[in-house]
Length: 509
Image 1 (cartoon, rainbow, N blue to C red):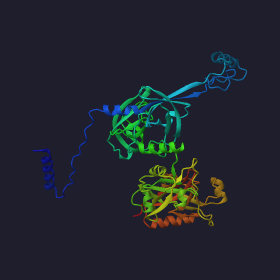
Image 2: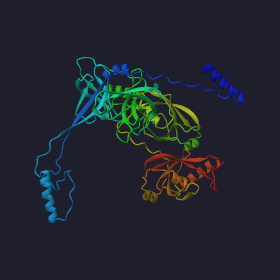
Image 3: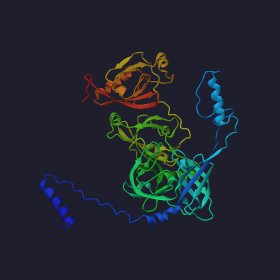
Image 4: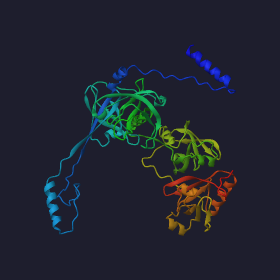
């Protein structure tokens, strides 16, 4: 019996044995691995370069101007009472060892090695910023051994990308960018670079994962690969099987410093975007919205009546920024930006940064229990982003009453001159101050502490402890599981969901 007949018979037997027809999933087959990567490697190697950079470092004598006690960086010397015979002994010893009156040590040259790739036959080379950072001399070495001096076109430390220019008397071999968005987990890839300064080396593997955040910065969106990447591979290209660059090899995870099969590459779509900016302007120009955001947890989603915990919760709006002009406000949840889903908070900065500056884009938000779409004109990210201004409530008479929210573990007080002095709260801050937090309660578990100020409850401003109490009780009676508070802490504004319990300690419903 042929294989297809056996599969059909097996499916029919299952259908007869079960009153509910099972969902039949046909088997998946992987495409065969290449017999060899040799032809592809031979085509790509000429476009990959080795990069050496050097900088001058001024050396310092251990004990300038007389040795002991000179304030240098030499060995630490024991301390003895002034006038002690041991004090003079060690002074004489250290002066003999380190040359008390020797001239200033000469400057030294420090070198670092990395990789890069040519993207234009005129001599445009791309690499990691950390490969050339601080260098006063950069040399690019081609596969045929030719060495060319390089000049810096531009660099971006946030994305760790740099663009170099070399001059050659003939067009250089180059490699094209591919579309990293089309690369899939499990696809074959080649990594080419200069590990440990050995010269052009080729390794093969697959795309192990996508969208990795390794804590390098706000734009982390790394491809992970098990193609061997070692020191010196930084700045080198990651290729797909069509010979296109889909990533720039940048980092590895390794306890030993050598490859253990966990390497990270910046996706080519991000590299290409930054490279264009650096070539056109000499710096990276990024889109900017002007909001402080936080992750939407299941409790926060429930508080807003949102079915799924996705999107980016706006916790602060920059004065006169693009978001403020688009009338975005605290408590809005951004679900889509320029047609792209914002599944998690960390997606939004990257999506905004890659959007054309000055472009008017649709922003889908969750507000007042339903989806709405507004338009925002993307600004340019300032060099020094201002701190988001705290959203404050209008002036209202504050009652000096202390209220205890026993189910939440909070004691609240009015913002008076005494409480402002006690907790060092600014005179312009509005809201209700937390005077005490009971340990082991929901408030303590969420990191609230005395001196924090509650600005809003369920997106409604509060001016005195009774306001907070009334709004919490209203939420409790509506059978919601959590109450959402906007709190000004020492780290800034943030939304804090607090689980509600009835008087018997049970959750409602």
